[in-house]
Length: 136
Image: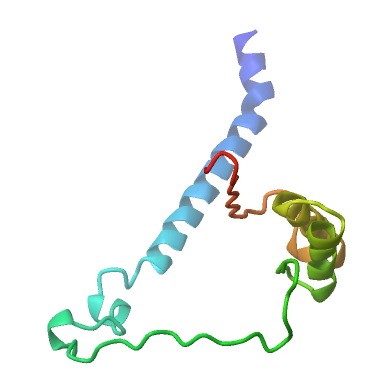
C-alpha cells in the first residue's frame, strides 16, 4: 500500500524537484551575471567626485523668477500627464468649487482614460494636503 502511494506520487515529486533545480540554477546564473562587476568600484563610481577636489569658492546664484510662458492663472493650476487631464482637474477645482483633492482625483481618472497603459492599480503617488482651518 505504501509502495503504491510512492509510485503514484513519484511524478509529482520529480516535477517539484525539477522545478526547484531550475529555479536554483536560474537564480545562480542571474545573480552571477548581474553581480559580476559589483566589487569593481572604478566602474560604478566613475561619476562621483572627491569632495576635496571640488571648487567650493564660488557662491551659488539664486534662482531667478520667471513669469509663466503660457499665461496668468487666476484660479489654480493642475499638472497631469496630458493637457486634457490638466484641464479637467483645473475645471473641477477652479470653476466647479472643488478642492485640491477633488481636482487630483478627477485628473487621475482622466489620466486613467487617456493613458490607460501608464496608470492603474498598483501605481503610486505623493499627495500633500494642507488644511488652513486646522493649520495642518
